[in-house]
Length: 245
Image 1 (tube, rainbow, N blue to C red):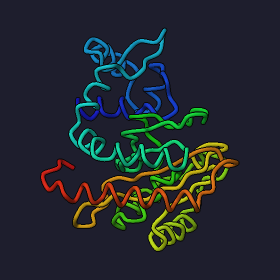
Image 2 (tube, rainbow, N blue to C red):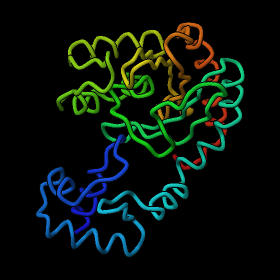
Image 3 (tube, rainbow, N blue to C red):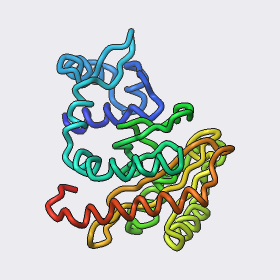
Image 4 (cartoon, helix red, strand yellow):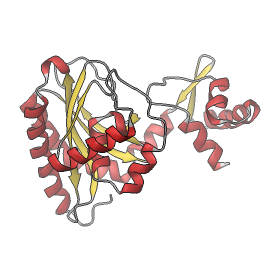
């Protein structure tokens, strides 16, 4: 039962506001009657909500997500540095973690004057198509990278890297340089620079980025500012051995 519920939640991608029963069944491989039965119970407990004839993720999921210990604690530690970074580069600042093959955004500080980006708090994006994802993958175990590259890499933006060999080479460069860059890989017109946040033992636990529109962003300059902010957050994390990560 739990595996089928998880499959239904996983059917909702980062760009999906609402899905119908038939589409959920198609994506999960479950029978429509099974999906209908489970969905009915999930809506009763507000894990899903009706949107006309379709369904969307419900308020109860958001509430549970807000109470999750890792994002909450890490967010508190990172907020001041994120605000300083936003003030320095005048770009939207993201804090994200790696969850299997995707990144999950746990905090976003939008910059004034920049139109909304495709990212959102609690939203997911393919790790290979974002600067934060590439930063985290560059310092992940080979098994994690192999798992990401075992899937078909689908273009999300105009310049998403979908060739596994090319992506591997890029991850090597990211690890050598310490900063990951994105140019219209997650969405048209978006540029971004990101780097990782580490524990005292060097374990990568999250990534910090600054993003804006390609025409307005000097990613090399922004990357250095992001790196400085991430180092500050890493030092704060290192001072909190009891932090739940």
